Length: 109
Image 1 (cartoon, rainbow, N blue to C red):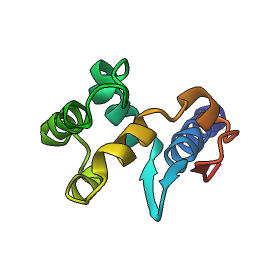
Image 2: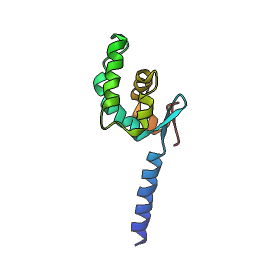
Image 3: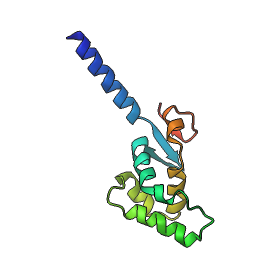
Image 4: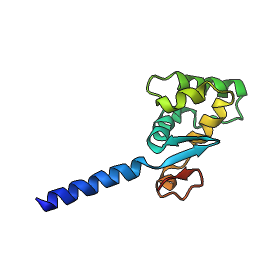
């Protein structure tokens, strides 16, 4: 019985620790899981950079903002000026490095 309790406690602690990592951009902070979802939504845009016309660039991230599975954390960001650039920075955050907090934008490990 003690073993089951200890394992349950360990799993709960790992879950809470993984949820505690925050990715910072400017004055805003977003959960690591939300940034992962953003990266999945922005994956088709990964090959497109500012080399394309800025209009195409903004239109691509407008589609990400309109996506129904976009986390609520990003709704207010999508309404701000410069949202496409900020979303591009967030979608470029390396997740494997962020999970061990070796990336400057990640905090809370």
